[in-house]
Amino acid sequence: MLSFFKRHKIISTLLAIIFVPIIGILLFVAYRSIGPYRSYRVNLDLPAPGSAEPVGDLLVGVAERDITPDLSKYESWTDVDNNGRFHHEKDTWVDSNGNGKLDTVWMAGFNNNRPAQGIHDRLRTQAIAFRNNGVTLVMVTIDSIGIFHDKFIDIRKRLNPDLGIDHVMFSSTHCHEVPDTMGIWSYSPFNPSFDYGYMENLKQQTVQAIEEAVGKLQPADMTLASAPAGPEGFVDDSRLPIVYDHILCAAKFDVKGTTQTIATVIEWGNHPETLGGSNTEITADFVHYLRQGVEEGVPEPNGVEGLGGMCLYFQGQCGGLMTQLHTTVPHRNGQQEFREASFEKAEALGENLAIVAVNALNGDRAKKSQTTNLAVSAQSIFVPIDGLFEIAGILGLVHPGWFWGKARTEVDAIRIGDLEILTVPGELYPEVGNGGVESPEAGDFYLPPLEVPPLRDQMKGELNMIIGLANDELGYFVPKSQWDVEPPFAYNREKAQYGEENSMGPDATPAVHSESMAIIERLHATLERL
Image (cartoon, rainbow, N blue to C red; front, side):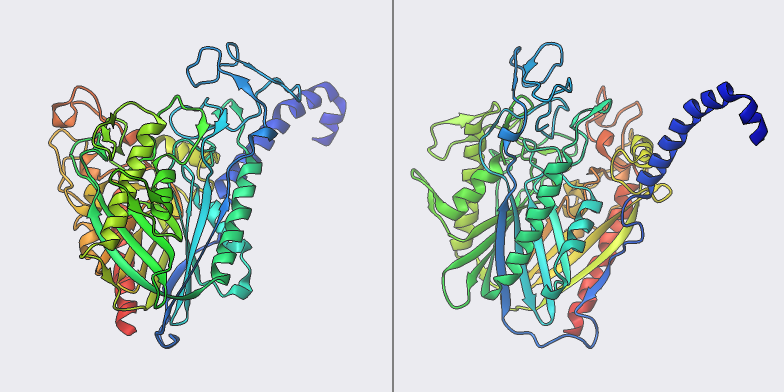
């Protein structure tokens, strides 16, 4: 064989030209399919049997870092046709490095050709740390469209082990006007422009926020409250059946024995996409105005005094699809209202939410937590993936790490005093968490609902939060009995409803529901030992 190649150098060269790149591509695909941290697993029930320290004061600390991109480091462009989208042939840009392409911040959500042109408000990565009875937990929320599980694993592994952190739970706010952190909106699949530098800075800043929060732990009191935020004037369900997660849940942490606020944690379910797909200014959307209103107050008329401290927003159940795009949002003055995409609409929504949160925490129905114990259960799980997402996973285009038809992800259950939290690695349909799963006759799988009982009914806190896009982003979790991509379509519709195209497949939601039920049971078993 070797002598053949020596005698036929031209054939050998041609074969090398053909097969070496193919082999290289196959090796690259294999590497991406394996993914980083292949053997990583989480399996926690803390405090462990026999290891719990006495329950004392709940210690709380917070910190945040700025993750707003510096646009001066990127190339600028002119939107010639003023449509908020970049066209290589129509629009103009400053090609400072002569590479023939626009090197910019590609914004996530809506279109994959939307370069940022300005900064409206700063983006944050925020961490709140808790410690009690021998357990140290940190919860992180990041102004991001979503982040895949492997990036969060990387952050965990970078943390200083001397800090004694037992577990870090991450979540993305799901803002649709921020840099692409998933590689889906970075111009085009044939001209990828994912900003690895921005992603690296985000991870570094998040590590710093986590470590600072742990370093600032201090005894705290906790107050819990909830109140309806809509649906009217706040959120619209754009897919049948109509089921909302519109109850705003809030937890306020004060320096023990005082009214000095350390932090306020808010969970509510709605897509931060008020600005729509034509906006080219970086913004945290209504989340920015919500946090600002809770921290600093909302001015008159009909405003509230701020609570001080730091406000952290955690995304709730926003699948289904929870949106304000089709909602008319009233101004607090009672005279104006906003329906079209605008910063005025985002401001009105965020300030209205802040008013709901502050009034709930200051109201007669707010309750001071009677317990201070801390517990966490966490489990790596493997969610079935199907269709285009499986192909993309095999190729390593999204969610690096393919486990023979499944994606490794995670569910957590947390107890902080009288507050209980369940995390879901994507955008849960509220009917799975709150109840209301249906089985329409024309659905692709005409079967009884599988995702029952509702997850929130299994939780035992005085206040229960279900946090989405946690530790991962696997898209919409559509109940299997409501899966509907083949005609005839359910609910007598002429075409399929939006949702399945951004889902891991019909078997993903039953798997996540089952694993969530199990992790809740494990948390409760741990609590019984305390």
